[in-house]
Image 1 (cartoon, helix red, strand yellow):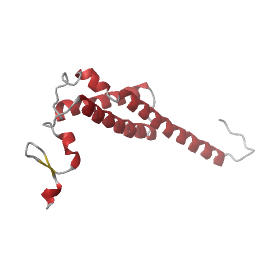
Image 2 (image 1 turned 180 degrees about the vertical axis):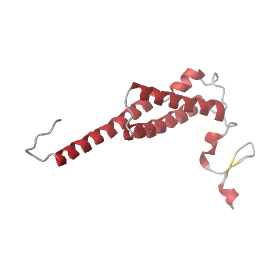
Image 3 (image 1 turned 45 degrees about the vertical axis):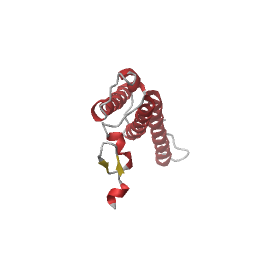
Amino acid sequence: MKEAKMSKRQNGHVLPFKLAWLLDPEASWDKDQLGDVLHWIRQVLGLVCGLLWGAIPLVGAVWIAVFLVISSGVIYGYYTHILKVDEEELGGHGALLQEGLFASLTLFLSDGLQEEEEDDQNHQVNADTVFPHGSHHPR
């Protein structure tokens, strides 16, 4: 009964969950399918890293570069080592590494900015509590 719920692939392997084809090196990929998967992996990385960087806070160009290296490294590792696709057949490394890059960078930066704005608002509230109205305090 449990095996009836599992999806069966053409090569005879039983896959334990519906998204297992995302990790199957024997799956066939066309450029659009792989591009969509790479795009959404980058979006998740942009969201997670943006929230993490903003919460710590890590600011500056160095940390943006670190995000780009991590994001590109994950994408490169995914399509070369996990999926083992022929990158030349799908447009080359440049096309695959560029997939979803700018959208994830925008998401990463906006999440980090959102966290910084919330921190600034919290600091302002704390300063107003420490220095009640009428008191002078440096801003």
